[in-house]
Length: 125
Image (cartoon, rainbow, N blue to C red; front, side, top):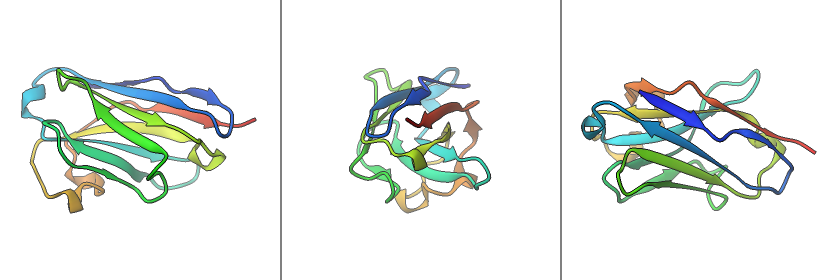
């Protein structure tokens, strides 16, 4: 089970951190990712990382502004979002994949087995 939290309203240029807590058989999870879906748009990849550490992959639109991290217990991942723009407004979903596929495949939503309920991030003045 995945529980996302931390969404809210932030002004353009501001920062926000959202989190995703995993419960259950977390040791079976290999990759955790963040996706987002803006109103009227398709879901898009944001970032993903191996639960055990190592490579983190980012979408080009957020690279340099967003940072994905995990806690030492490897059961919670965070997404630190800086220099937020109105176009970052979306419902952000965390996802977990059981299979350790190459990082080049992490942007594909179909590889994830579990999804959280989403948390709304609104960037507006």
